[in-house]
Amino acid sequence: MSMHRLFAEQLRCATNATGQVDVVKLGKFVSAAYEAGDRERQRMIEVRAQTRDEVEQDLLRTREFLDTIIENIPIAVFAKCAESSRYILLNRAGEDYYGMPREQMLGRTPEQIFPADVARVVNEQDRRVAASGMPMVLEEHLLEVGVKGRDRVVNSRKMLITDGNGDPQYLVGVIEDVTERVTTRQRISHLAHHDALTDLPNRSAFNAALDERLERAQEASTSFAVLSLDLDRFKEVNDVFGHPVGDMLMRAAADRLAAEAEGAFVARIGGDEFMILMPDNASREDVLALAERLVETIGKELEVDDYLSHVGLSVGIAFYPDDGVNAATLLANADSALYRAKREGRSRSAASNPRWTRSCAIAGCCSTTCGRRCSRTSSSSISSRRRGWMARSSASRRCCDGITRRRASCRRTSSFRSPRRTG
Image (cartoon, rainbow, N blue to C red):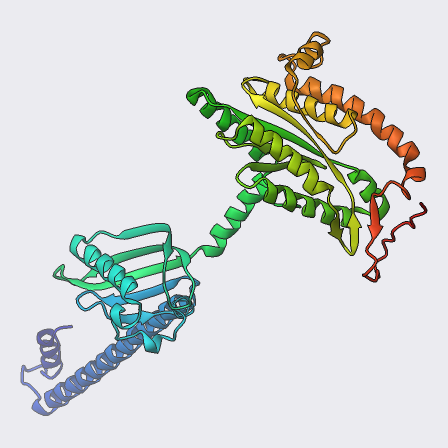
């Protein structure tokens, strides 16, 4: 109750029935009231002090919590003075990112930390954000830090913090290093369009390149050539020495093809089959000469796992637009020329023969309606018959066919053994 009501109550209690006030009794009442008031004020002071301590402790715990979050978040976080661009905060991820402890960055400007060209870009970004007040967001951009000695791909965001009057106070930024993420995505994309064994473009990449080349050739009225290649006697290497040696031989052959056909689009489309897409400016004579060089270079001995392996190469050639104006016909004629080269003895090249192609078309083998599928079917039947004959005669021919011989100067410790030559 209020002091007035309290005093009126005490006065009533100190007045006797005659209306006289007992001064001594009233003094005791007043003294007790003041003591009670003092105790209440003291209690309130203590409550306020305790509340203030609790509030301060809550604020301290909140600050420590936020500091722990910022310190351990796996993204670089920094804060700078908006006026001087001096760093005033850097978390642990920021130390790892910049490659230096925060003691070497806090209180310093970009000019004192980074190379001159990097510091110039950082300061320009700071001025732009401070002037506009708008956040700056950069996705997957190359940041030439120059501290760790390597460039990084990052997502970065920088924003302005103002005071109560709206004046610039802090520049706060976050930097997320996405180099590994981007590298992984690029690797996946690379694997989707390249052969895992030889790292050459695969069938999908070749088809896309051929479609693009056809469209460009039709617009510019230019010509180009397609080469269909197949390794001879590769199956025997796999049968005798196993797939590990066969894989090494395939990589060695692919390297030779890519080196010899430099400037052309070389692809492995599966198994022992390759395709080459020649440049637009290659003449017919250049294409035929390259085919002969490819046959020659693959025909040379290939050193594989201490063995000198002998395989061959057959090449079929088709020219746009003489041998086809669309992908299906062009590839069908290249494949037909390839299997003609194989029938004539292998380890040679053959160009598509329009007269021979027309005769096959009459027989229903290479019509434009069935395209490459029919050619593959006809060719696969020929190949199946040949391989059946090769499988039956393989045991008697392996020792004298010259497929692979052991290198005399090397001691072999692998479980793969070369057959003895007998004649």
